[in-house]
Image (cartoon, helix red, strand yellow):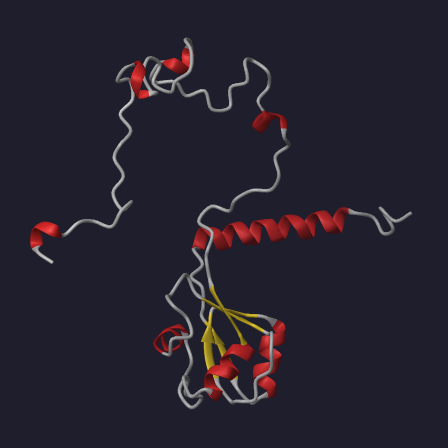
Length: 184
């Protein structure tokens, strides 16, 4: 084999289809655009336009919402923790947090925090630092003799004031209702 004989594998490079090159090419005249009219021209973005009829995406009802700045948490089950400790990937004697789990190769990357879920069983005594823990996970860890430390969330003073105002409104509206109201 010589340098001048080296070629790409057949089919690895595909030539661009050159349209509008005459009747013999098979893609001449209209060049794959069909007949005349709006879609034969450039700059057409019809999208959901259905000739004046109410488009499908507007006929269907709206459902739910997408939370703005939604947090994406790493989730781990207590069973997975136990498996990692059994496989000697995680040391139960050291504190377990998000960084320790990534270092051990249990999680791939840090997201917005760590959630502990209660699927599976754990027998090792572990000291965990997480953002959130389900009730079953908390019970399983405490049963095994471990501890869970929840990371404190920063609450802005404005948010706290809004929360108090809402709670006051709810308690006031609950006090106004006469006994037995709404029960039939």
